[in-house]
Length: 211
Length: 57
Image (spheres, chains in turn cyan, brown):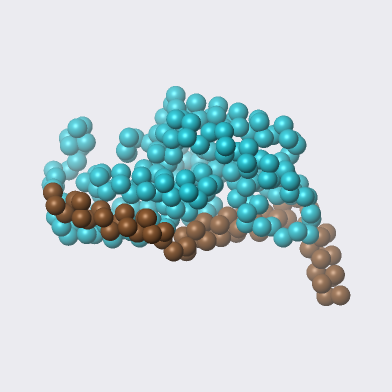
């Protein structure tokens, strides 16, 4: 509704060519959406559900996409909003990080053991969601701090600090071969995640581009 | 023997953040490994359907 007022008067209905172009761009970023979603929620099936919802929502909202801007960034905003909303509705609660915490605690310290990607992913999943997504965007997705800040709807400094904390936590987990505080961590991590989510829910966690 | 040497080097390693470059790269690999997966059928199908539905409006 208010969108109509802010959209440059260009046009409301898109041509077939526009739609074809949009679809092509959307198709191109689907693998990236899958990677981002997998990193966020850890479970391939849920991740693909997120991607599916994102694609539908993106398609429905295509008139709000500005051609020439980054489709990947635009769709990531949609995906993270769906993810955060789902998290709040308990969809991912409970099952998710008990599983992760258990597996990571079982990993032996093994100095010589090679770092398995699965271990890294598990470590990543123990991070609070905001730090995890910041690290995913910057460290895995290759976004700049500025782009990541835009996707998350927060200040650049906030992203930098989240990435820094995420890196420090991961380094520690990887060096010690487990969660630093032993098995207290599992529960605490869960509480921390939920606290952060409540914060996100109360504040501006959802980026405004799309609600 | 060669292997032992390698282990020794790897085992002693650098203290502290010695592992960091490795896992930082791993994060990218993790992401890329998913990007490179073939698209699951349901997502491919959904993509194909987007046009059908909308094309009729």
